[in-house]
Image (tube, rainbow, N blue to C red; front, side):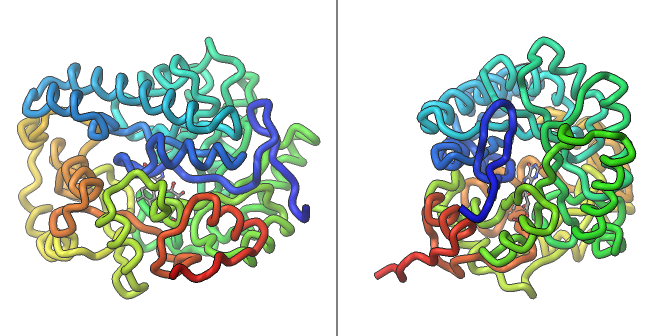
Length: 385
Ligand SMILES: Cc1cc2nc3c(=O)[nH]c(=O)nc-3n(C[C@H](O)[C@H](O)[C@H](O)COP(=O)(O)O)c2cc1C
């Protein structure tokens, strides 16, 4: 075996991680299949009720955010338990919680109570994550960051609380899909995010802090699309790699087949970047809805107005929402409705997050097993007949 396993939350796992993908794109089927292979599968915790018809029935048109929160906690509990069962005791089941989500402390608590092995937190600095899991000392904690400055801040704050991250995901904003770790669109390709530089600065920081053998493994995310890249980074200072898009389009991916087709068919020229309602830059496929939204972005920004009724579902999913809070420099659309439409395969209405890179198997849907085998061992499966 040319690669080393990664020690995380008391287990030795394969160095390929599956990134959390909301809404509903990485739920129990995908995360469970990845864990079964001996790797870390990640359930995205946001708005999982949409995979559960009974919970959708209770919450549709209810406009009561406490009921929506309750339904999402029930859904997360079910998804974790189903993923664990599919994993057959192998690998790890992680739960991705976005800091920008209003209900993030309760989602973290639910993930712990339902038996998740690891909490992964991004979309904001997860400074207070250690306090949120105080009663669960064995749960793994993994922040998602993009640059050495953010890593230094989180590490130093956590060390004061007597906690170290169990791994750090370093996500490159020029390549990854979904919300990105730069504050401005103009900065996405800034040199400070280059993997080689971030690895070097982080290793220097670990040295300065005297972490020695306790230094957390570094996991690179964004644009990892071939066995060669996996080999390169695992021999150049990283201990793991995380992929999103390539897992979203696997046979076991939890989204509608149309969702996978949109991602598979997208050419580099079809990719676009914009500022989401959470105020973060994001990357997605320029589908019909997104193209027309971008055309009217300035007009909508000029009409921005703080009004709770603009949250049509009254779910208040985000702590700060450009649409509800009238923040003109943030996006002006309901991200939840758009991501749910994508999950359901509504090609004209949905928002389809995708990384910028190519896919390892071109336009072919393959299994999680084939993807991990290719990434780690370079085995390209036989062409489908
Ligand atoms: C459809 C989609 C949804 C995503 N949703 C989330 C999310 O909810 N939380 C998160 O931390 N990252 C999210 N990501 C980022 C992925 O977890 C992963 O880090 C990233 O896509 C890696 O880049 P790659 O797609 O080039 O492999 C999403 C990515 C995609 C493609």
